[in-house]
Length: 103
Image (tube, rainbow, N blue to C red; front, side, top):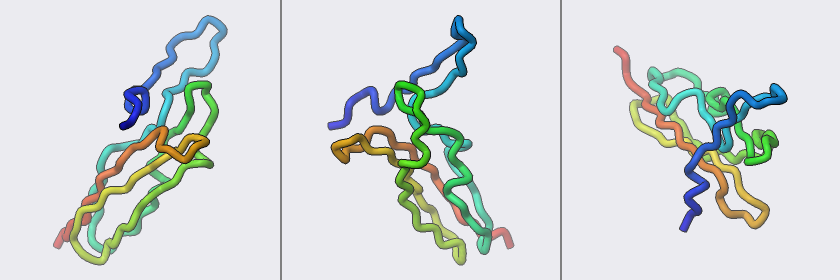
């Protein structure tokens, strides 16, 4: 069973030393995207940030599970995952991708 902290975000606001604020976990630019048949798709372009509880950038250690075929209409789920040292999922976000025929 996952730890509840895996699903909670930590927001840092107006620190006394003017330290930069960050959101713990994976942040995507949007939760869903609609593509037209034939469009290209780049899963990495939807990543806004990924930080641990100490503010360390985790984008380089992110695993992206995707298979998007834009040649026909369909729905997909892209998973963005960061694991802990033991290989367990520490942070996870999902992007819903809808491929639609616009003709």
